[in-house]
Each structure stands twice: as structure tokens, then as C-alpha cells.
Length: 343
Image (cartoon, rainbow, N blue to C red; front, side, top):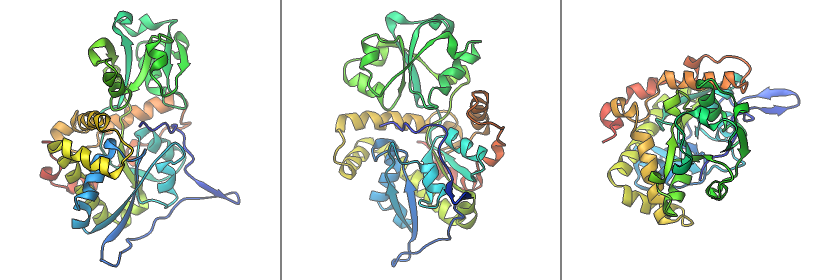
């Protein structure tokens, strides 16, 4: 359910010692006169990506003159890599991945920030509640590694602590060790583990929930991106794609139960109750924060600056990245507020 791809991803194809990046192609037309677009998801199709699935199934992309192919992600499929290589036109990734790409000289650029908050939360059972992060000194904390621990480490640093002040326990994707008290604090996602816990009777009121935004340490979730070259050559296509995708998300906001049914028909291996919870959590992430004022997909440079700072201070990138190069909101600004509205 959650993407576990690390922060530093291979974003170049090395052939004979020469590094090649996709130069991008112009628009390709189908026999019906539709423009082909390949979208690479961050994970397999489910309610986290409902807006794009709805835009596909309801014909919003086709109405916009697009023939969109939705490609699944997975543990061994990197959207930044597939877009950088030219295999896909547009991808979904996390801001840290795009910043890391820019640090390595790969010209990826964000075109819409769909999640307006980090999907990560850090939970403790109520009996283990703390009054400040320093109360965790010397205690075991379960984190996903491979770069996904950076957010929590940044939270510690904001309170004058380091990762050496706690006992980091590499956790897998099961909440059972946490429930069995193998560690007092566990990293979870709002649309994943929190929903699984609630389904098992472990509702949010049974936990103390730490939010990285409260510590100025949030790395936001899903963003849409492409290469600079693709955007330069296909501005009209990108705008049509964003507008149709926003229409899909608005449909989800207005009709969440029907949207889930459509997602279930798209991927028959999904559980209906679980997907209802994922839909609710995803809509909250998309419509919170700056989206309330500026609409869907709003890109706040301060959020990217914060993510860049966390990556640099943690040593995940070796040199500073000019955040103004990480995003291009020119297309977003051309889209009417009516199309971007969250209600």
C-alpha cells in the first residue's frame, strides 16, 4: 500500500560509461486523434490514486483529448527512473525523490503537489505517551529505513536531539511488533497502517499521534512530475492532463463511495472496507493545508525548501539544490480556480 522506494534512486541510465537522460519526445497521436500520455503510479492501483483512475474510467482524459495509460508502481519500479529514461511521460513521486534527482543532475520537475501534508505519523500507545520528544531518549523506535527515517530524525533535531538518542529498530510493514511492545513508537501512514489498526479495533483515540508538521519536519507525499524537456514541448498536454486529473479527484471528493467501487472494479484484489478508509485518508491529504486556500495541486516553495534542508543536513544529498528549479507551477497557474477547487 505504501511506497517503500528509498530517497536516493538511480535516475540515470549508464551505457558504456556515458550517462544518458531522456530528452523526451513530442506528442504522439492515436488513431482517434488522442494524445498518448503514460502515467506511472507510485504503487499499485488503489484508492491512493483514485483521482487518476476515475479520470480514466469516467472518460475525463478522453474528453480532454488524451489517451492516458496508467502504469502500476511497485517495490522494484521507480517512477523517477522511468520518467527520466523516457519510458513514462508523467509520474507520481515524493518531493525528496525529485530533489535527489536534481542533486544528481537529472532534470525532473514537479508540476503539482497533490498531497498537502506528509502521510507519515509516529504513534505511541496512550500508556506510553510522552510530553516532549526528549522523553524518548534511550527508548526503541520503529522506523522504515532506506531514507524514510529522515523525517523523524529531523523531528529529533528540531528538539536538539539526534538519532543516537534513541534506539532505532528497523521495522517491516507489519504493525504486530509495535502492538506487542517491541518498540514504544512506530512510523505509520495515515492511509495505510492507521487504517489497518482501526479495522482491528485500534482506533486513533488509543494512540498519541505525532505529526511531523508540528516539528517543521514534514516531507509531503504524492506529487506529479515530468522532465523539463517534456514540459517544455507539451505544455498543452500537461495542462489537459492536470485539469482532467483534478476533475477526477473532485469526483472522488463528491462521490467517495462510488469512486471506491470504480477503483475496486479496476483492481479486483482490493478489499472494499479497506479502500473506503484509504479513500477518506487520501482525500484529507489532498484537500488539507494550502489546498484549502489555493486549490488542488498547489506547490508551496517553503515545503520544498524544508525537504531540501532535511536531505542536505542528513547527508542524503551532497550539495544544495536550488528549489526554484525543482518545480514549475506555470501550468498550474493557468488552470482556473473552479477546476482546482476542493469542495
